[in-house]
Amino acid sequence: MYKSTSCGTSMYTPGVIPEELREQFGNACELVCVQVPKVYDSCLLRTCLVGDPDKEKTEDGIYFDSDLRVRIDCSADGIVNPRVIGLVPGSFKIISKKPVASDPDRKFISFTYQLKILYDVVFDDGTVSRDNELLLRRSETVGPLYCPDSKAIIRESKVDQSGTIHPATDEDDEIVKLEIIARVLDVQIERECTCTCDPYDDVCYAVFTVGIYHIIKCELIVQLVIPAFGFCPPPPPCERMGEACEQFNQELPPDFFPPQLDQFITGPGV
Image (tube, rainbow, N blue to C red; front, side, top):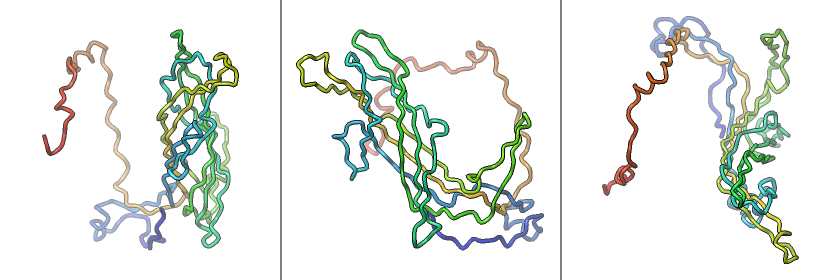
């Protein structure tokens, strides 16, 4: 979380560093002013979501989400290869930035997003239905985070290769960034029996458990004075890929046998 510092406007003017101060700046050749998105505050949110309402434990950070309970055909024998593909493009949106009454620079951030999950269904006759899609729609609130309002209005127009001009929007002044790492932890098939005795009337669900790490960052476009060591040198030339047999002949032979048990054992007792 944000901690206040004594840093303010730099006492050093961008330009060539005098020789007597060169060592103080790590032998940099000059001070330069760069414009960058600075992270003012951030936090990590860990969420475990379940498709079974009976497993919800809000006090432990386990929450039920109805999107993770998907109705499937009861001839399904199992769910395999469940994987989180990523965020649905354009789904991340800021709902509100509510300031704290005692400190308007600290805000509660509310946002929404959608995750796309794919999975394969194996049926009892051996057939497989691949790449079934599940959309997980979520809304979260985090904070308070130190997100001061921009004092300057920054505007620039970007021109692409076709000559089309893309004017900047209000979101370019104050940036809230979302980074997500998510994975499917478990998936089970549940059968709900109906009041009739006919098993063909039963209802079946694929029930997912998903773990999500969120990092929320509040950023502002700022100008910083930093030491520079000159322009970056030209990169080394790209290595040429040889023919398939040339690459094969340069590889080390693979291990022909499984690793021994003692290769996995570590610790002071060994």
